[in-house]
Length: 479
Image (cartoon, rainbow, N blue to C red; front, side, top):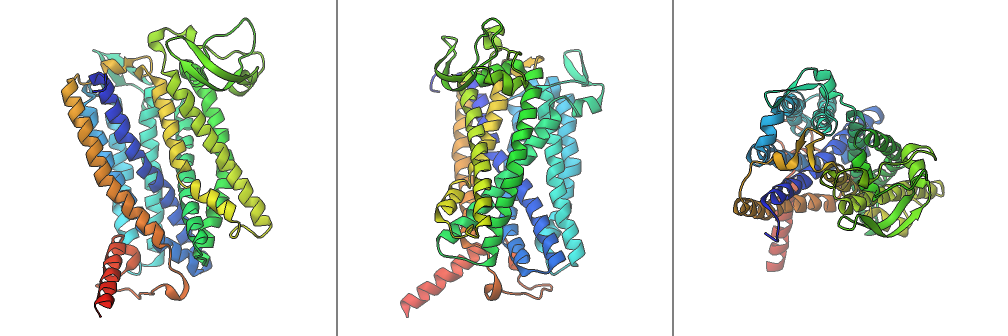
């Protein structure tokens, strides 16, 4: 297929499925915490706007959670079908870590999710809030175990190799490996930012179309406070993560920077733009700033950054790809900081909800968190190549060895099914977003009780409402 080998198709298939999957857990993590904050503010202040927003976003959370579970199951199977050699070699480490996620995070979420989604007005407010908080904690625990497993593959420790297999000897060392704290903080923060800009874009979209109510204003305001506070923190976490990567995966940093060789004792320049050419072993058309690479990457002006030519060609990642994915992530991060600062300035002038240029920017920034997160994952995973476990197992040795035809057929099926299935799911989720929250007199208040309709508990209610509206329109036309 397109001149690619079976191994290439296996890698593309895993990258394709994880790219779809990671979107849903990221929004789930952010929305779960957002819902906990909304319900807590409602219980504390009694302001109905928080309750209305909870009802609105709980529907979107439910749809997103379901798609995340389905897409995640497929990935678990791929470890056995396409990467059986990896599972055989490292399963004693990765298997228990994923099991711990199920036993802690998934069971916690599943236990309280029903109360959270269907228990409004059926259980007491304290128990319902507790259930929402437990679901939010469950999403973060899930992130903990997944990142522990993935980070171990980048910076493995706490193991011995016995009879050709990795055997854990120190679980604390396995879990809290050198890159784990930075990856966990970076991913959790990315999820919060992705959700904040998604929520903010939804509010800005409605405001631009003339809808203006307290819920929309509260949505935009809370999202921008999150961007203002968290985006700079994410930049600082990224800097610490970069220092850690330089220490443990220097070849990755060299590929990200497109830095091929050092000259004497000169500090390393920062290449802003260029085109790393893997064949010619140089970055062409580069625009660089002298010594800035050393300052950013080592926090000094006399230390050099390792260069790609210091590593064997077979041990180098594809610099052409990671050079640009990293810059997409950084550029979007700077835009997030700018958006938060602009929002603060408008807020101080009392024009946050009226400035159309800013609202248009907020709408366009809606997918920025997701795109930046994907770019970050491509950077860290492609940058690890050719290793599936850094220094222990190469990706070429980890596959199941399927043929080209098998991989071509399965990849094609994945692409078709994923776009069809999750395309419908995403389309429905965006339909819910377009409906917007209902506040004030337009919000139907239900007393509750067995057998009564509970709008916030039924994420598919939007489809029923559309059917009722369409039916009413048809009857009107006939009359």
